[in-house]
Each structure stands twice: as C-alpha cells, then as structure tokens.
Image (cartoon, rainbow, N blue to C red; front, side, top):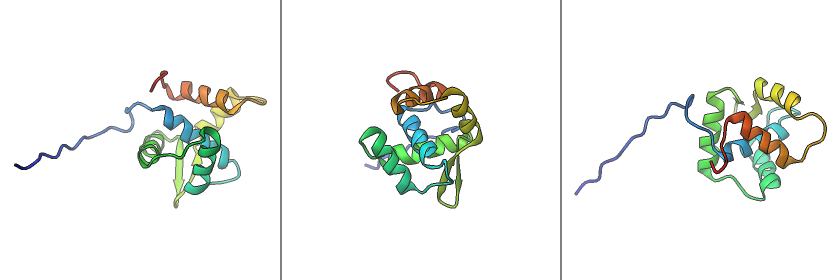
Length: 116
C-alpha cells in the first residue's frame, strides 16, 4: 500500500500568527536595534526572554510568516525588524516596560488571541 502525500498550499499573507511568532519578533527587535542579527544572536535573545530555544518549526514558520508581511527583513542570512514594527514599537512601548509586557503588546499587534 502506498501512502498519499498531502501538500498544503499556504498563503503566508493571510495565515494567522502564533504566540511563538511574537516571541521570535521580539527577539529580532531586541537584537537588531544596532543592525541586522544572525540566527544565533536571535536564538540567544529568545532563550533570555522565554528560557527556551526556538524549534525548527517555530523558527522557519515564524520567519516566513513575519517576512511575508514585511515585519522582518532578511539580508544575506541576517534579520532585522521591518520599519512598521520599529515604528509601532516606538509608539506602543514608550519608556521602560518588562519584556513580558512588550510581548503581550506584540501579540495584540500581530492579532494573536490567547492560547494561539
């Protein structure tokens, strides 16, 4: 018996975001303030924020969803937050906020419901 392979076509411009996408975006936002950052620096920031390492699925899916909407820009294997995210951050997170508060606001920015 041969198995059937199912190929799922996804429109990354409309696919919903997940909580891990907000975590990934915050990690990129933090480490790319001085310029684009590589995956290793972003992963270390993610570990600092959440005491966990991104799975390959969280990384690849998150990067693709965030890039499709212009929230992350990749330049030769280096990543930075897109202009709309930087502008949003400056307006939505003035002053000193905890990382968890910024993450919560990023969830709202991405339209993520609780438990996503």
